[in-house]
Image 1: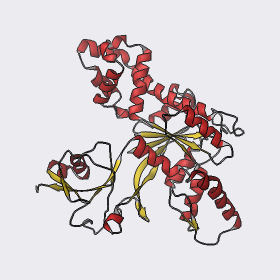
Image 2: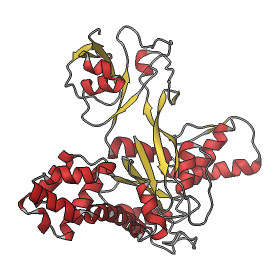
Image 3: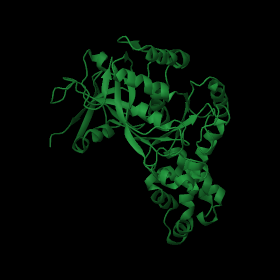
Image 4: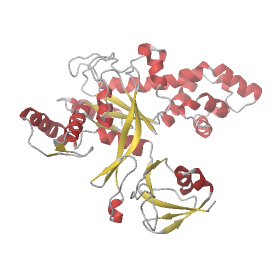
Length: 398
């Protein structure tokens, strides 16, 4: 799974990325600090099942703190996008293509309105951040449209003359975006395009199709960054009213980065996503002043910095994935003695059989049945996995 970070230049994307991954990236208040994409590992946070079994887990990947399990997710931070990106402005085509494999997008918006459309710094509230929300979605929709439209004559001709079905042709054209044939068919039916020859589809209909394909393959969450700047809450409230169908999360990437660095240096105890921190040692007055500002201005007002909530929401609310633990009814450890070593993120409606294949292809091929380790209940191949399930797979010996 890959989560893409997008936004206009200087919106705080690179700070957001660094706060999420603690990767060493360039951060500067001017446009196009990022040119090549930054790729790192972020973590979704879930309640570990270790307490239910009265054990302490030993993750192979990620980590667990105080019963909070952090499961790795790939994160890509692409260069800032400007209006006209789909036409190549600001090297937009190059940057958009970096997002091909992203499953969902987190759009980092400067909710304080302190960067203009080119990503240049301006006084807070000079620009309307709601325009940023609109422009970026339009750019990505038009990116999809441009790719489809570029080859539409060929696609429609093949569909009508060679009798290839249009769903297959479109899914093949857009396969880099993880577009599937069944997905295309459902959208064509929804838009009533199945009643019209593809050669007669007007541009506005192809654009509608492109928008629906983008929504299905690149859903967008809005991270309202720089919420710590006084007055930004008003813009946030306006955004919630104007975009009621979006997930909008108030964020301060600067605050999260400061907290994570302080925790890494053993100055404070802080678990990402928490609503407070604890001092672990006496610190310099200027450090304490900065941390207290974060506590009062961000944590107490918004209950978190929003960064952990944003990636969690992208995975569990937008994509509706579930976290599932492979385990055994007789023992919870692997051959190396690690307890509950793995936790897999599974797409919605995944079954026990899908989970078996996720663990190993041979286990999937020789699947007999599954067991719910918490209840000891036997499960069939078509059992639909639930969030925080602990599942044992029983397969035939080869």
